[in-house]
Length: 438
Image 1 (spheres, rainbow, N blue to C red):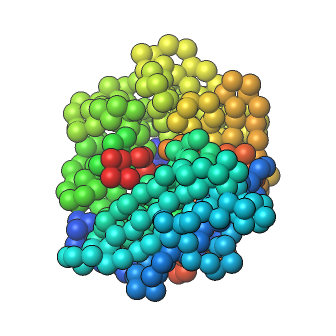
Image 2: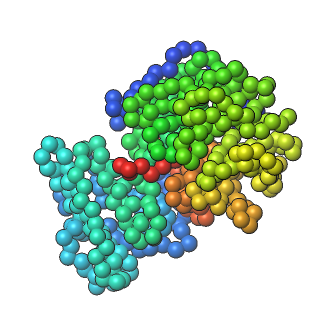
Image 3: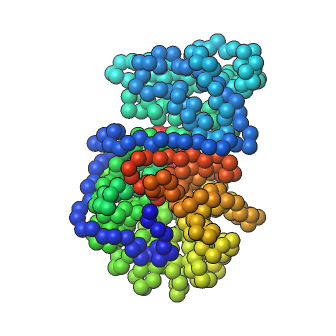
């Protein structure tokens, strides 16, 4: 287990010289890594009973579309999911409103899968409201075999939005770091449920702090491949990358502005870890504040007018807020003497962070309007929270059997899932944004 230290700007990780191995996503094998195992615990305050029937001709399809949809909805904690007793239900129906209501279902969905020309697959799906006896529409998607899981996630997102009124996040992606052995690090991208993991970068040296650009086209991260921490930006689709912060001393903790044009980075140009702003494509950094303390872990507020960050200016590390044009610094966290790793919800109303309570590093949140705090996970060694694009789920790392794993928790703390992978340490996750193709 990599123990947490507040001297984050120094990034005191072990160094091993040698070149990193860069691989573009187009050349990746989808079986490059073991798949995650997902375990779900807890239920939401209210759940919507929904039935997902067996899709017609599923045995010919390489991916179990209906099973993936059921698993997505279950993982959200907002749905009590039925398989309609194994009954096949296509997009043609017919809707059995009376039968569904006798099962206390509020909605039901079904579809079909068929192979078409060019090796593609056509997935058709429809959703019905069992209470109002209404057709809620559906989707018709034609995809290559490698995008079948994405098609299933899009169906889940459709159901989620129709039944909750909020946009779903099942079709989005996550990035994270794995460590397997002393000199085997990788930057990875996967579906939101951990499926389809792919290497973006493999290295014998530590990789840290991946963060998505707002448009989902790039990942910024820290690599030690040159013998010191340097911030790189990598194109997600092509794999092309460039060093954007390679200044004297340490370069760490990148964070994108909401418009994607600016990076906040932590540099040690003055000998102490301080926050700088610079163009996201590289350029001259501008120091945001001048202090005699360690300032690190910046994250932009959703309105782009201020930053949250961690500092020891009052003794132990706490989360603070400052405007991008300077001015007074506002302290945000007070509960506990060690609070780090801030993450802000997309609506700007909730801050998630890691708080040391006794010997545990727990996941907490604070309502920024009322200052009310809540424990989201009181387990051990929680770290690096990241919000889903709809703000309803937090992704984070945590101590698990045999090492670090990824977990998710609903914003109310009621529903948790564990994405575990055998044989590797999984850490520092970042949840990607909605993109036009997702």
